[in-house]
Length: 138
Image 1 (tube, rainbow, N blue to C red):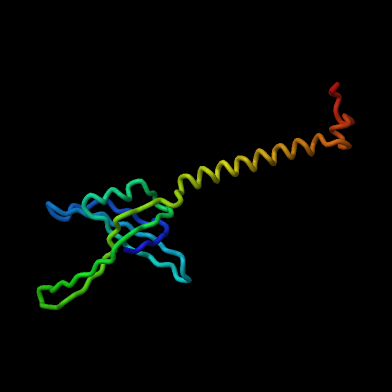
Image 2: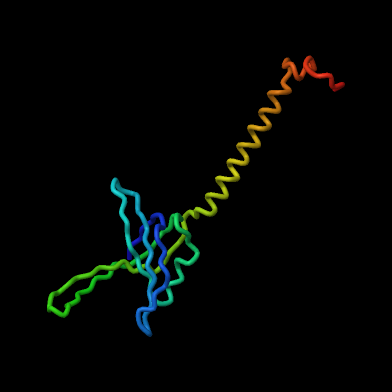
């Protein structure tokens, strides 16, 4: 059993390979080393829906098993294949929630700037506060 976190780059549709077998593939980019790694995972059978709630750009944590197999083609050549078979997917950080938080933060910053501007405009000793430039009674 292995575990890795990364950014979801690709989320493919479920594929019915045969009457009794279905799979779904997805790709993450893992950035913990100097050279980012692009990794293809597969979900099979009832686990195909594990990636459903994740969005492209989300940071996800994947628990998986490394699978290897041998295959002989029609010419008699032996080939070897590896696959990363995911059995658990957790969303670590969602881009949807991050964008909302970022927008709220920008909104808060804008409100703080607006309040600061109003306070500066009406600061004691300024022309507006002393009423020198306007004819308002207050």
